[in-house]
Length: 467
Image 1 (spheres, one colour):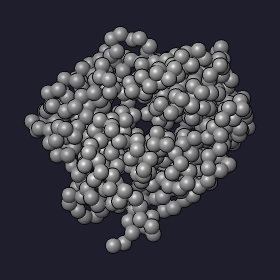
Image 2 (spheres, one colour):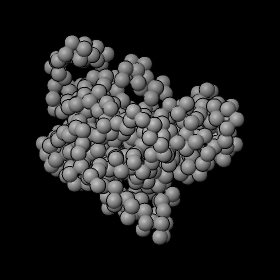
Image 3 (tube, helix red, strand yellow):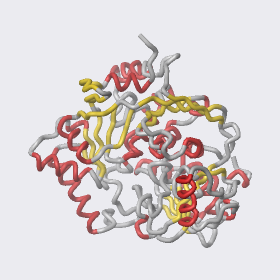
Image 4 (cartoon, one colour):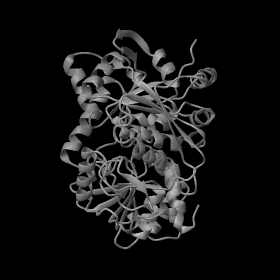
């Protein structure tokens, strides 16, 4: 047999029927429904008179529309429409008999945070959700991707989906990360190198010395932003680090089934000599913390660089000029001179326990600049409990951060708090008006956000002599 990639092995194992011209009917192992699109998916299924094909493989999770404000009671939606959508998601999930992870559930949290946390996402599984950042789950060795609502209804009714097989790309990160440099900086560097459209049509496997050294949580961050270079799928082939992370998780196999699963998962690694359609390498040995200056994740530079002048093809140049105007920045300005109004740590990209530990360790004994509003939103109830058990919440509060309840928070829309301000954020999108009307977002790692919160402007955590 010819050497095969990880993606080929998982794809081939899920083909129910080859439909020709590259299209296949695939078995879908898990369907995740969040409160924005999930209620629509369930409504459409019930309106059609069809039944759920495999209820145990469907999970309805309340996360996008929650109020995360500290001690908010009741913890419900942030607008009347949101309250209605959450209520509908709850009611329909119960009527259809699928697993509901509600607000008051000890397991609650952001879908892409709790899916690996609970072992819902496992190596070699196919997982879909009405959210493009489902590629996050590639960090655990699953093949996850975002789907539309009509596709969601189809999966709910059949537990299968028609997909066209993409080309395969391997991105190899060589070398070892330096102090204060993280997976977030790696993925921003990649997007800046290949552009926001550079991964279109590819399933990207992340590999190399630097990837193998990442924790599972850092791999989830890496894969989370694969879609920001237009790759539908991003993943790391599972290894012993993943198996150790998953053992004992609620939905992970137990006993003899666990041993059999691990044997299977080990067989999924890309074979020596497997051919990819595209290959690229990035040496991270000298990589500096990255921060975006524009309105696309591809508008990124090292934290010590200056805002670049628009250049390149006419379309790219026009996009950069528009980005500078929106961001109210001038080419040539040192990024470290950019004053911020808000520092935000949260979202499915960087709200896991390891992210909070890094930021809290850096913040210990320091104080947020007087003009900065600083907010931390843990990614799940489990992350929040663990952080509070370690006293991390006290560190954040002492430094001047707001400590919120878990949820998606202000990643999208800003909940009205971030309009017309400049935010340095651990989220994954800096599009115009993404975090609110006229909000100017700079994407960065938790350490860079923490350092910037204290400095009051974009800052390099390495300059503080920590880590």
